[in-house]
Length: 241
Image (cartoon, rainbow, N blue to C red):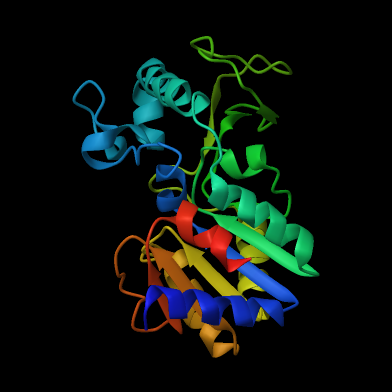
């Protein structure tokens, strides 16, 4: 199927749908200039993300981890939502039942205006207290090192799900509910091979949904989904409206 035919098919499905769920990943943020922070893009002082985004790294050297997150915050603070983010805000307005699930932590969906969403890996602009568990929004760039909780003066950490940690059960429940009850599932800018994203496409298909992916390259899900469209999210997603 050509890109144009795929866009036409997704448009037709969306035009008659009432329940739409969208999963987004790094690809939609890359169109805003946000690096992946994994691999060469995320190399900082010769550390890889996998070496710093862990509870063990934070326990060992919280200052180092916060310095890395300050570097990430400075990069992301200079980026803006792109037309794909804006198109998803419009989808939220149009459909009776809409839910956006993002694997991204950059906060660009919220900045664009999305409100019906689950940030399953957390948000870099939120902090949580390691002592009392309080979660707050914090847009300081740079954030003071080492930041303290306003309630109990405990050490704050980024409100991010690190490697080796479990996803929030409530957000995960909302996400699976949205995936299993939608008529159309759009997978945008992600290979969808990491749990729980890896289970979303087959779960939605099993429940009878039409599933489409928009990604720069084919993914392991490309043979499973109904339509696979190759291209930049910022160019393709607005055409689906």
